[in-house]
Amino acid sequence: MLMVISPAKTLDYDTPAHVARYTLPDLLDHSAELIKLLRTRTPADIAAMMGISDALATLNVGRYHDWQPHFTPDNAKQAVLAFMGDVYEGLDAATLDAGQLDWLQNHLRILSGLYGCLRPLDLMQAYRLEMGIKLANARGKDLYAYWGDRITERLNDVLAADSDPVLVNLASNEYFKSVRPAKLRARVVTPVFQDQKGGQYKVISFHAKRARGLMVRWAVEHAVTDPQTLKAFDSEGYAFSQEASTGDSWVFRREAVR
Image (cartoon, rainbow, N blue to C red; front, side):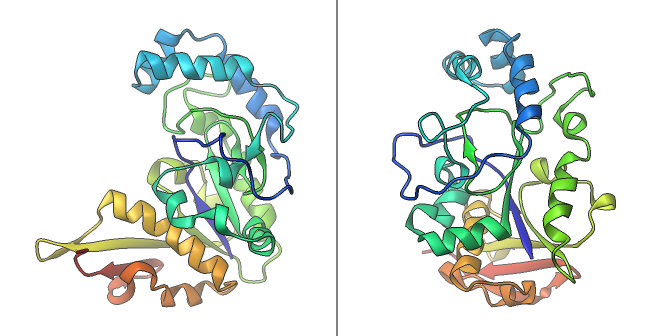
């Protein structure tokens, strides 16, 4: 079983990593090519392309300028510890011990506009580059064209070790579009998280993002290898709903949060 999640826009490079172990991203040569392209853009270009403020655009132009291909713990941080945001608050990787992080390293990948496909302990330098933006490049009009089959191939490499491979999709639609299902050699299970509101069950973005991280955390704590076990997920009041689920779309519901 392999899980995938999206990255986050917010980063934490101030808090020291609580583990020394790290690995290096597999696709750094491709990341370097993207950095080379991004360095040709002005802050105004970046602001318009990403729909962000001038201050954020200037910050990220500086990040592209400072990015260097030789990653060390002095200029980079393990991805799962560097990302912040709702998913990562639910996961709370900073409280996992070394053994749990090793489990996570084998069972989780983070999809990324700049790095393609990250293992949790891969060192990562600060960046912002959403997968869905329009960035013309030598391979096409956007990052989906840029990454092509490369992300899918990396996932297949991991899934090949399983006799009955299953990919648990906990990523957003924007990021999972970088995976090519027709070329993915695995069954795809997609958990859906719904909260009761106004007498109905709905996907509420903030809660759903956090729930994705909570499910990864639950899987770590229970050392899950069979995805069917995920149906027992019960963090923060969620429960599997057989009647609302169809096929490999697994719905988890919880009553109104008080």
